[in-house]
Amino acid sequence: MVEVLVLDPTLGLCWLDGKVHEVRLTLDEPVAQLVRELLRARDGSVFLELALDESGKGRVVTLR
Image (cartoon, rainbow, N blue to C red; front, side, top):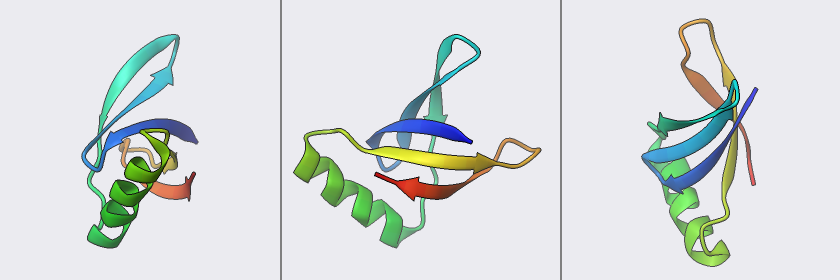
């Protein structure tokens, strides 16, 4: 599991191995719309929890 600070529906930041990494997000439109609404309502404090597969691709487990 990886927690990502969402900057916008296409970009986030995560902390792995002691470093900050940029994460490119490809979200389905309903999830992207929800992220946009949450970013507006929460002044930028939206986190995704991703479950990563062996290739490094993730699926959204939690959005908070």
